[in-house]
Length: 173
Image 1 (tube, rainbow, N blue to C red):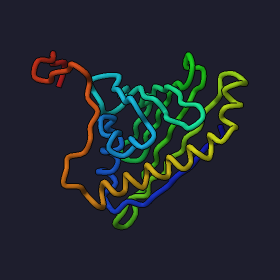
Image 2 (tube, rainbow, N blue to C red; image 1 turned 30 degrees about the horizontal axis):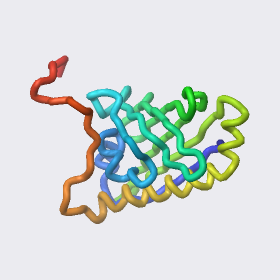
Image 3 (cartoon, rainbow, N blue to C red; image 1 turned 90 degrees about the vertical axis):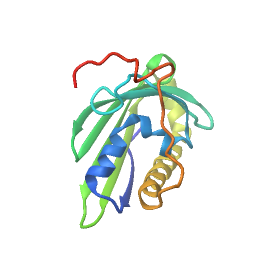
């Protein structure tokens, strides 16, 4: 799939928006409208190596995916790489760029995939690009609402099943 771009401007400091997006446990707060069965892949949910497995609930072809943060340049850029579909044949990337304005932050999300086989490319050509563009735009609007119209309720967070932080082993700082 050719690159899909979505952008928004958020009235919040760049570091705050960056830290929020970089924490995979908080992705449910603004991506739950098209991602189902969201599960973290490791205990540390922030920075390089953090990731999640989920179901992309596309209308024609729902697919499993697993994404992981591969590069972080705080507070400017986050790069994620993932495997999508049956046997993880399709490779996907997501790149976040954060540009500081006078009293705001511009967030640019670029998503693209490289189909593993011809059939995966055919499925993507049947409207997946337009659907993904709408979902990315919607998720950035929801991200903006998290900062500009905070809710009274705590934000939804993904957790690791059976993980008890007070009983976990402590490694490093």
